[in-house]
Image 1 (cartoon, rainbow, N blue to C red):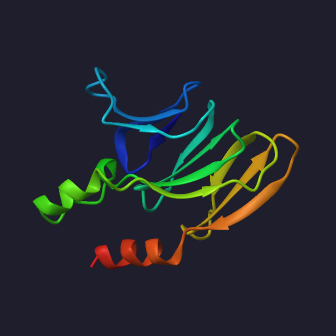
Image 2: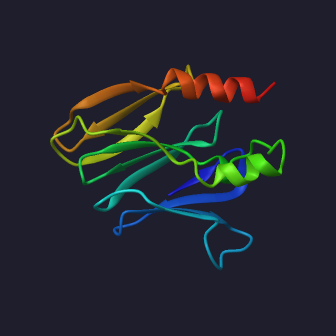
Length: 142
């Protein structure tokens, strides 16, 4: 689980069913978003601290996934059409370079576009958010 630092009432959770869920703690009846994220249990979930539509999930299915969950982010929608398209945006990248369960992920403290992950056998890999995604996020802020 992890709280969203930019939306204090939002919490992300991952379960043994491979589902990623985002909750509003003020209305904990049903999740705001549910994503069929992994084929096995989710070991970690991380909101990007600067651009909270970006999320990482890792799993015992030996993958790390980078998500764009704009619908539950703190980024304001520009118009009704944008709100409609947000629901369809989700998986940006699946990283399957591991041969073992991936236990944890972390966003870089010095740049919002770099992240790392570590597997059961201690292998650490560094990755970057795709440039086109980075540019879309930066351009949408202006």
